[in-house]
Amino acid sequence: MHISIYFISTVFLLCFSIAFSQGIGSQKKDTIYKNKYGLRVGVDLYNPIYTLIDDDRKGLELVADYRISKKFFIAAELGYLENITDEDFINFTTNGQYIKAGVDYNAYENWLDMENMIYVGFRYGYSNFSQTLNTFTVNNDYFFHSLEKIENGQKFDNLNAHWAEFVLGIKAEIFNNLYVGFSFSGKKMISSKQPENFKNLFVPGFNKVFLNNSGFGINYTLSYLIPLYKKAK
Figure 1 (cartoon, helix red, strand yellow):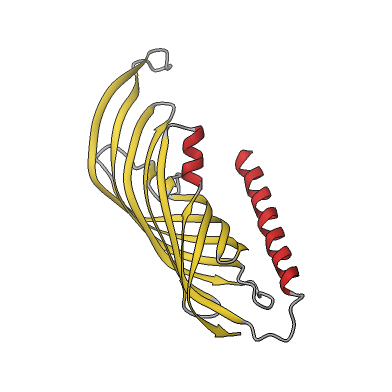
Figure 2 (tube, helix red, strand yellow; figure 1 turned 90 degrees about the horizontal axis):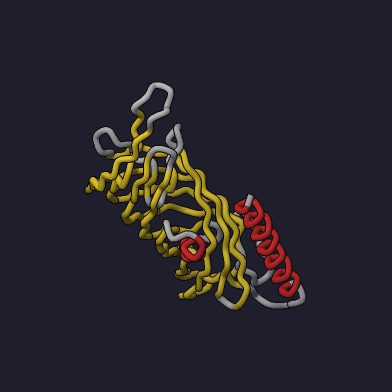
């Protein structure tokens, strides 16, 4: 419910920002407008905000993209995440790093000198991480009348995962070269190195792994464009 509210409000805010900035730009006339080409770097705000309300998750993600043509951008995300997962019969900690790289296509036609984006993208993701089994519960009775929680603490190192993800997102320029953004990603696991008798139910960068090896993620970003050169539209 909270994610839905954040999603709707964020999309509304960003669309309003784009429309407002386009309205300002439409007042300019008789000018040769150019696209900015450069490196845009920033940070995902989701994990720092989530950490304030939930001590079980700590992480940081840096984001970047580089424009290679009018519509296409090379994009990447690099992050670190520590997450405690508490299920009905198991509690474990995941700790590791990840990197995602791919391309974005800006499907939005900007007016005049605007540089906003409504984009679709693709990422290849890789994560290297460890899992620590904190506790698990065993059943000593056929009717689940006798459940016993066992403290474990066993750690599984040198795990990894590969996945692909499809991205939908928005980036709006709120001040000169400063952008806010929101994106949603659907993910599909390609391969995963798992401990014996312990499935990777959570992977840094992928998040929760569902039964069909799929997942999803959301990002709230704040980024700054370092313009290197310009090309006429």
